[in-house]
Length: 146
Image 1 (cartoon, helix red, strand yellow):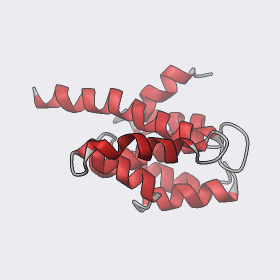
Image 2 (cartoon, one colour; image 1 turned 135 degrees about the horizontal axis):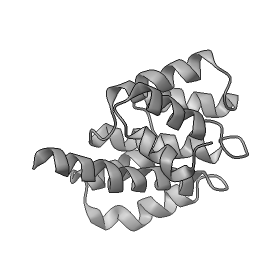
Image 3 (cartoon, rainbow, N blue to C red; image 1 turned 45 degrees about the horizontal axis):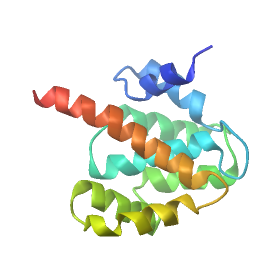
C-alpha cells in the first residue's frame, strides 16, 4: 500500500507505471460530490496551464482512467474532463494568471477567498494541489534549468 507522500511523488514521475499508481491513489479519494483527491488533481492540472510541471503521460493516463473506468463520481469525472481540456473556474484562472505574473498581485486575497469558499472543502483541496505543484513542480523546473 502506498503512502500519501509516495503517491504525490508518483504524480511527478516520468515512469508511466508510477504515474498510474499515483493517479489511482488520488482519483475518487474522499467523500462528497467531488472527492478531495479529485479536487487536488484539478489543482495540479490548473497549474500545468501556466507552468509545465507534470509529465505529458500524466494527462494521457488520467484521461484514460476518467473515460474508461468508474473511479469517482459523475460530477467529479466532469470536472476532471474539463480540467484536462484546460477549463477552470474564473477564480482558478485568475490565480494562475497571478502566479504566472500576468495579473496584478493585489487581487490575490480576493481570488483566494473566492476559491476557498468553493464547496465544503473543494476550494482548499484544489489550492492544495496548486501549492504542491508549486513546491514540487517548480523545484524540478529549477533543477532542469541549472
